[in-house]
Length: 383
Image (cartoon, rainbow, N blue to C red; front, side, top):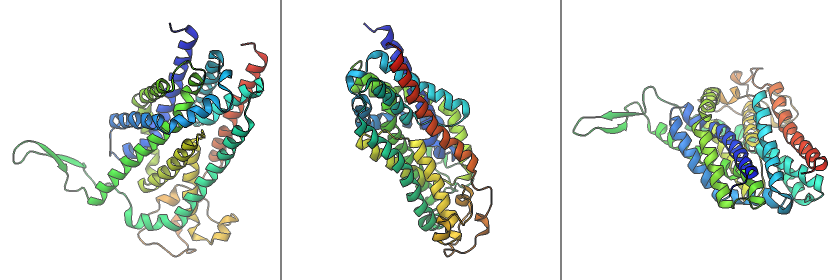
């Protein structure tokens, strides 16, 4: 018989997965929906399927890490598991209130670490490895995209910019018998290739999100044996799908519209690099933030693109144009030599340090608060 406490734990797990689905769907399928390549319902369905695939394959490693390697499985009593999930849900609530996406992976690990410190069971080696990757992954994301932005992106943009033609992509033809869909006359071959790439990479992003985030919703419950890992993955994927079909509709609108300054080509590069980093870390069993990596990819790509107007040494020392998405939005018909002035890359509103600082502040604050609150709870409250 299902105990009331386990029922509460399952509800909290669904709440966490629901919010993950709401935010991750917008990140993965924002470019595809914003450019009218797929509709919201199709995006939600694809998100659900590929999140399940990611959780069922690579995501198992992350669940095992969070469910029994940071602290022993014996510490995950049902009460402790519900408390950890509660802190993750609370962090999502706080971040949504302030309009800043929290890292659910970092927050969940913080709550588990607080439990480990309070009970004296924290595996410091595992925790040090996780924190090391938290530092390395954003730096790696920044520099990979900075190199692409400075040396590769202008050439890709000049040759393979993905633009939408006027009019519908598909049209229904009735001549010669039964109605049949076909590409409209205004749809170009490049556009078709671009649309396929947008959908394929969005599915890859959804796979990565499922691999890294399924553990955030169910790892404590799997760790204490309340549910099997297969049941946990299905529960997490179902909750993510529920969020994808409901609250993600607003997120898709927001991300799709906000990405008008970020060309589809740039968005695809950001998604490929950030998803690859997170998938690799998930394979290693490291819970990491897809949002942090994606943001650093955007900053790095814009920085690399904008600093083509100065020499590399000056750019590294900060003697160059400020960075932004506008550096990526500048049209490139002809790639100019390195160091040559480009007026469309010199706008001073390219990058908002205040906004970026606020986002990074909350990324550090939420797992820190989660760890502190968890420690105080388990150290001083008899559970």
